[in-house]
Length: 178
Image 1 (cartoon, rainbow, N blue to C red):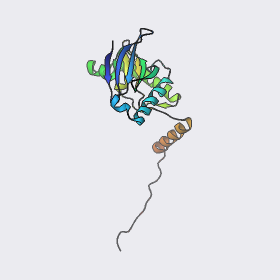
Image 2 (image 1 turned 60 degrees about the vertical axis):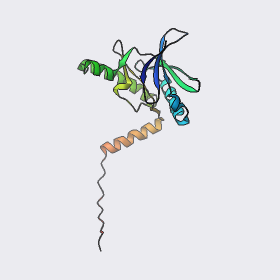
Image 3 (image 1 turned 60 degrees about the horizontal axis):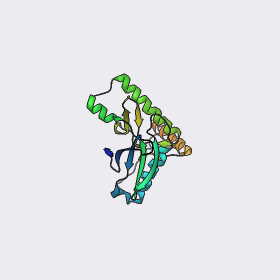
Image 4 (image 1 turned 90 degrees about the horizontal axis):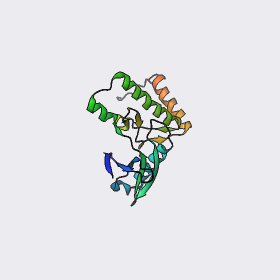
């Protein structure tokens, strides 16, 4: 039995049953209207590749990829629960202690991704699933990207320079008249 879990801008996500293990899984299938564009297919493949490298209890696990009638898909853990956004909309703000624990675990997941050279680039409440037992799981590395260690250092240096090193503004005067 297949059911729709959610609909993103590029790919709906379905709940399915793994015929070999009997476990529930989530399948993110690229929209057929976008599957014809090579650049979109490449980004989708990159998402699968990037996410598959991550092994952390607070990152949704990728089990594999495939293609059905020319449309690529990603097979992931099914997370029983909902998004952090849905949780807050339904029940209101999280109590401070729980909010702190959720944030800390999500940050551990992002730290792990960074240690693997991956930057998420779309962290938001919709991309944090909350399991039935309250565990956060970061999802949707769709626009994440792998960054080389050298590039990470230069990027960090640029951010630090911009924030902490203030060069004096040049004083240039131009005469526009005669």
